[in-house]
Length: 83
Ligand SMILES: [Zn+2]
Image (spheres, rainbow, N blue to C red):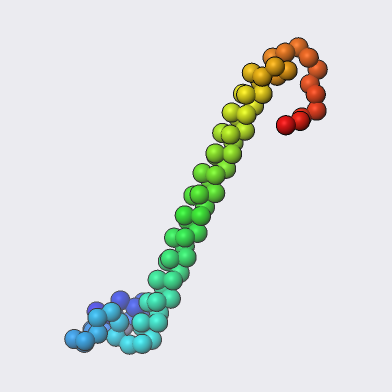
């Protein structure tokens, strides 16, 4: 059967995917949309992971600053943040 949406006609012997060029085009569009959605999902996953990594790095740097001389444990007034 032709897998194009709303078609479902029987395929002839030589037709492997779709019954007509119109259905082939429809299927191609569907595949493109699916591929784009998949890519967007991957990008979102990477962005979330990158944000988590940034937060982790900030936490670690805060810990380093705390342990360094002049860190928050020392009873000195806090200076303006300088790298
Ligand atoms: Zn069709």
